[in-house]
Length: 225
Image (cartoon, rainbow, N blue to C red; front, side, top):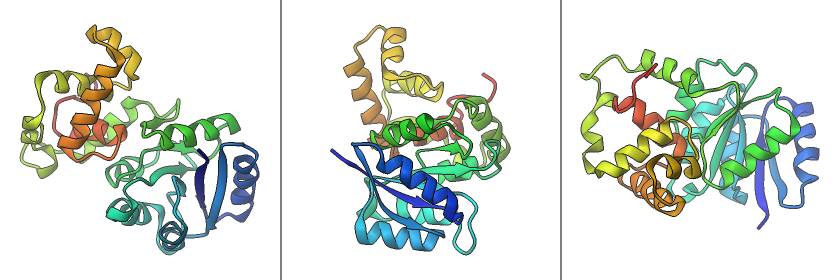
């Protein structure tokens, strides 16, 4: 299956470079380019896309607002957004994850990293580039979640999960892939995948990246733990 990619960045040269790279892969094709967020949303709705490479900072409608528009549209439930940042320590990184992005990647990433990111996002996995570790996410979430009185900190959101699903969620928040989680919990990878899918369904999460955010927002996993 060919992965349809939309490029959203206000830098024409960068979009051109990404297009050449993506179109050189037999399993990918660029279906459109956008110079701002509003245009990106229009193209996704008109042409469809599996993965949107979205710059966070663009004139007009920025990447964060555009991501929300995409993820909140039921018709675009299968579209995955990967945020592109100039600096991986970006104040908007966690906001973009909360908005529904599947992860983020620095613009200085190697070509192989970029292509891998597209494939990972298309498969519904969480994408965190090597520098953007769970510690970074934890730090920003700690700043954004002041305490149990905050709506985002409502631990009762986890009441629908079974004990095993909570265990798996903790492992997902730690950035561990299914095979590693399976070895840690002494179950099969298929069982882990089933638990992950059920947790996503119960919590209304689009993908694993959203599970990571929920794990921290509800206090199931603590920053620095």
